[in-house]
Length: 394
Image (tube, rainbow, N blue to C red; front, side):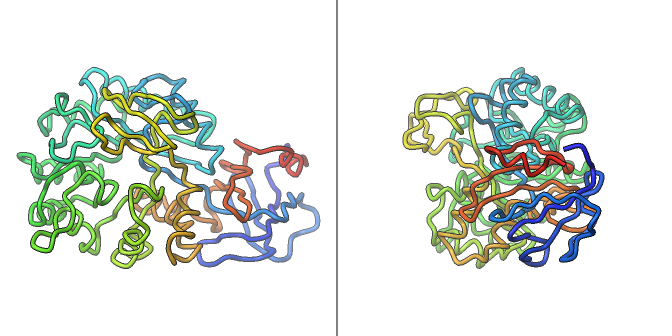
């Protein structure tokens, strides 16, 4: 690819408003310059009949892939995760930590900060997500409680400092002392507070949402569920119209009927797909580490020694396909739950998350079964399967 101006002609184009057939998407200098049925004759065309053009996915909660973990705290680990994600249509991600020692945690955030400023070669680091340290034991999941820390401004500030401006999300348990104050403190710094790994009741969760918390971490998992006399944390984030919920649509973490329930309550704008993928993603079944805990992966399902689910081995294109096949959610809405919805949540929808004029050309090509065949970032191929690259030789 030598030109910075060309058309992509796919069977279907998933734009921000609708699915177009037979359209041409003009890429110019890394941005989407036009979407048309009548291409200009003097501009090169990548003819990709049989493939569908989607907005690149954004994975806002991911710990690792292909043997690499964010907690490795090395540029090589983030590069491995970045290139692996590109193979699955992801153009941007939040590098997500897990509970570990304080020194390990700070090292991981420092490394994320470096990658945020320099960027790896595949999916881009959109920032850091702190999932760890500030939880309670009842719904700890795959977090080792001996490393939990007090939720204080001093601890938060230390993370902000070493992460070099990359910290975007902090997950916490709202029943911790001073949590409402810290939530407001984070929100005032434009860092998104999320609620998870918590035994908070309905009232505590509502108070946290009122203080500025934005929603629920992998909803229903790692939180007090719905009881008819206490709607719990899950009930509170589902009923709050402004609260955003993360969803792991792997067919394991959530029953299909619960996916449908979430959709009915949250609608298409407040339900975002995440992978919550760990180091075992893309690897064989076996024993792996997640933070300080050993996890066993069997049939692609990761669990701790006590049987608790420990993240997933999911990819977002599979999550989208699962959502479509397991529920009656419209296809375009399901696609946007992995792209536009997380982009809006993170505040980057002016440039990412949908196929629209003037947005960055961060795109993925899939077949009708949502298998990814190519991924582009700013109009440049960062992943291409088989001989598909020949269509981009201009």
